[in-house]
Length: 376
Ligand SMILES: C[S@@+](CC[C@H](N)C(=O)[O-])C[C@H]1O[C@@H](n2cnc3c(N)ncnc32)[C@H](O)[C@@H]1O
Image (cartoon, rainbow, N blue to C red):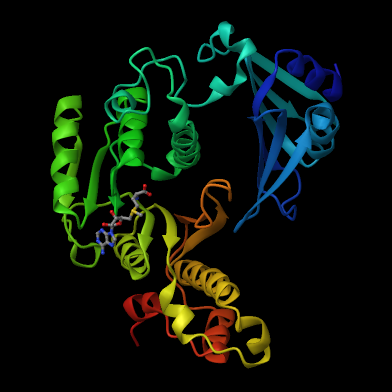
């Protein structure tokens, strides 16, 4: 059967997610493309194409899915398709011959056919202890209406975690969540790794706020989450004797993100996930003569400073051998602070790029992260 026919057959089972990987040509820009089914008022598909450094998103109508996937498939050797019923693995030869294996998708109950929204990692209708404790879900498993956005954000976050699991390189990872705050996402991380995936993970949440940490420790005891620990402390001062495999820092303010990145790099963390917030440092330093007219508007200057800060952070991580991706964390409608820096340790430390040094020189910038990691 040819590829288009196979894709059409898979779509009769409703494609929830597809992963196109192993590019045919090394020069092909996109190392992987993930296709997500999105169920808003009207369902559509989002194509998330990854280069070495970035992810690009395109939305595709349902009726165009097969055509778009077939076009894209010519660039890849492997396609994994998850439908409501089965998991399909397609291997495409040089001559375009398709080898297919199919197994039942035990994770997706048939009853979900009419409600694809539940293709999330945490599923509505299945009670999840921490969501019930945090008041997001009712004991029956129904998500409370006003918490639906949070439920979606938690699921989106877990998808990012799922994507990075192979890169942890250990069955017993230690993970730190810097600036964990109320820790919806920290609990979700624990639940997903330890309770769902049965991974022997140790997770630490750190925050400045004593009362918040006190309450979180009570909650994790009530839940019996033994390998989760919350501590009071400042990221910049935090020390840990054992190795740390993954560092997470979500919405930690201004330089707190830089200290989180510094720690991650010094620990040689294999995966880093940071969603920065409030980029005051570069905002104050930035002088761009030719753009004075544009930057007279505080809002635009703020956005530009934020983009430059995160771009420079990415460059510094690269100098330490990280493969860096800059991507959207959640939809803009929830918060403008939605840029995620995701980094994987792949190479040895080298040096700061010319582009980084030129940018700092031309725009008169002295980022804290450079001072912390490249002090000379
Ligand atoms: C906006 S909240 C984000 C909470 C959580 N990470 C999330 O995304 O839902 C930021 C948290 O970072 C904490 N924080 C800021 N600076 C910190 C620092 N230097 N050390 C530890 N925690 C810090 C704050 O106390 C606050 O709880």
